[in-house]
Amino acid sequence: MLSQQQLKQEVARAAVEYVLPLLQPNAIIGVGTGSTANFFIDALAAHKGRFRGAVSSSDRSSARLTALGIHVFDLNDVQSMPVYVDGADEIDAGLHMVKGGGGALTREKIVASVAEQFVCIVDESKLVKQLGRFPLPVEVIPMAVNAVAREFIRLGARPVLREGFITDNGCPVLDVAGLAIADPVQFESRVNNMPGVVTCGLFAISGADIALMSTQDGVKQLRRASS
Ligand code: 5RP
Image (cartoon, rainbow, N blue to C red):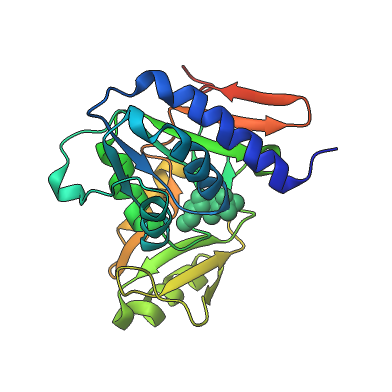
C-alpha cells in the first residue's frame, strides 16, 4: 500500500514523462506550488538540459527550481509556455479544481493562463463528486477582508481568515468552508465579482486540460467528462 506521499511522488514522475515530449530546447515550462509540485520540480531537474527554464507560481517554487539549477524567468519576459503543471486540493470529473491550499492561487491562475495546457497532478484522494468540501481559498485585498467575509456569511458559508499568512502578493487569504459548489463556473464568476476579491481558488472557467491521478493501481489519465 503506497502512502499519500509516495502517490504524490509517483504522479510527479509520471508528469515529467508526460511533459518531456512537449518541450523544445527553448521551451519555458510553467511550474506550480505545493508538495506534489515539489516532487515534480525534483524529478524535472534530472532533465534540465532539455528545456530553457521555468516560470513559477510562488517564491517557494522559484527558490526550489533555482537551487536545482533550473533558470526561473519573470512571466513578463515570457510569451508562451507549452504546459503548466500543478497540484490541486480537489478536482471533479469535469476537471474543475479547488486550489490555493498553499496560498499561491493568484499566481497559479496567472501562470496557467499563459500556458497552452494545464496538467493537474493529484493523488486519488483529491478526486471528488462535487467541489467544496475543501474550504475555498480566497485571496483578498487587506481592507476588504471583513466585507468579503460578510458576503460569504450571507451565502451561508463559514469564512476563516488564514492566521499568520500573507501571499507573495502581500494579501490575506480567507478559507471558506460550508460551500457545496453545484455550478463551479458560475460560482467562480460570482466570487471573482465580489469587490475586494483578488482571486478565488476555483479553477473552473478555465480548468485542467488533463489530470494525471495516482492510485494504488498506477497513474491514470483523466480527460474532461464533456470532451
Ligand atoms: C497551492 C496549491 C496546491 O496545488 C494544492 O494546495 C495542493 O497541494 P499539495 O500538492 O501539497 O497537496 O494550490 O496553492
